[in-house]
Image (cartoon, rainbow, N blue to C red; front, side, top):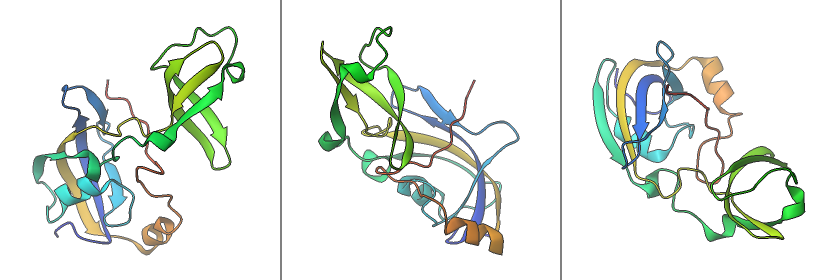
Length: 169
């Protein structure tokens, strides 16, 4: 069976950047699974996988426009320094977790002054070219309950990330 819309797909993968830094991967014996065409993964990953079959491997590159997009200026926010712990020596590139009306989110510190912290709320991989190395572990018809669960899924896009955290150590 070929990968196409509304089929269950499970892949082993490694994701690297132009610098060859590994930024994400599937865990041994635990392939990443999703329903193809359901908006659960970035468009470029789906394009690279479309038509593949179980047992096939591939390497492909996803440009930012089909990944997490380019950084958007409106997602840089000035936050009062007093909203951060006073005992923390703030510095650019530090990662913090915040909460808002739609739940928790992570952001990167862009810059720090005496009164203001500029927070970058863009996806951490915005603007990055993504290099995937994948092996298709399973392709099958999606079960009814999997398709039903998909209807409640937040999706994956530059604006809303429903990504899983994983460690590639």
